[in-house]
Image 1 (cartoon, rainbow, N blue to C red):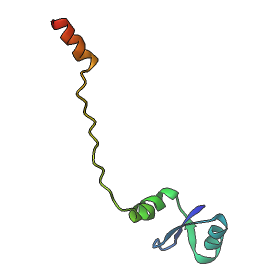
Image 2: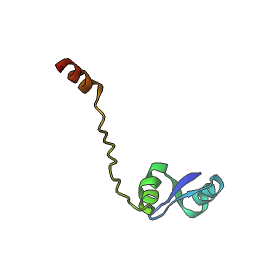
Image 3: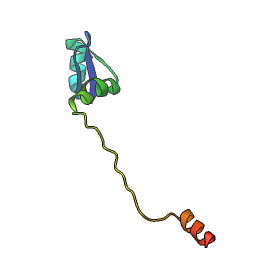
Image 4: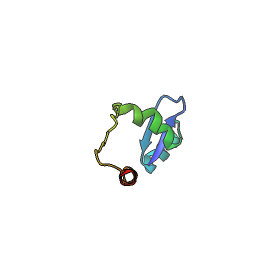
Amino acid sequence: MKTMMSLDGTQIVRVSDEEASKLFHDDGFRYVAKSLWKEKVRDLEKPTEEETPVKNKSNKMSKAQKRHLRKSK
């Protein structure tokens, strides 16, 4: 797989190696980094989901708290 961008910069595509060579020689595309495709195309298509932090609270006492209780008795 190769990442190609049109010379005017309007279109960024991921294509197979054979298609990439055709686009490069015939249609005026150039090779670009995959990271450019990720930020301009792939991440825009995904819906943005806000993550809610998961709170795992426990009522158990830590070892330090237990040790402190034993010493104070």
